[in-house]
Image 1 (tube, rainbow, N blue to C red):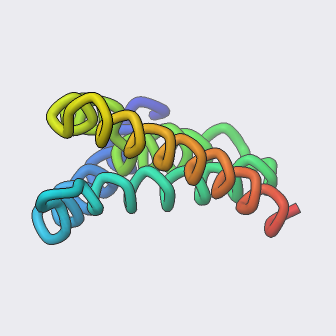
Image 2 (image 1 turned 180 degrees about the vertical axis):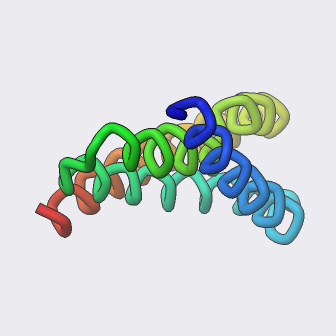
Length: 108
């Protein structure tokens, strides 16, 4: 049952990630930045709520895992080149960590 919950959540998150990338990734991968920050915020919220194992599988591992993307982040960061890529990586990581902490704080 847990695998099915992860798959359902992941499918929903992946569709939203695709749409965000399709709509907002241009010269700067703003869609990827958006889903990584939003997904980090939601994971902070879900962590603070102390969800049961099934809810955490659906929402945390599945949905947030499908919504956020390390692979696209890595490829797009590399494609931006050394200087812009380093800046983009720093902004993404900083905002994602701050969003996760904020989500935890809001829900706690």
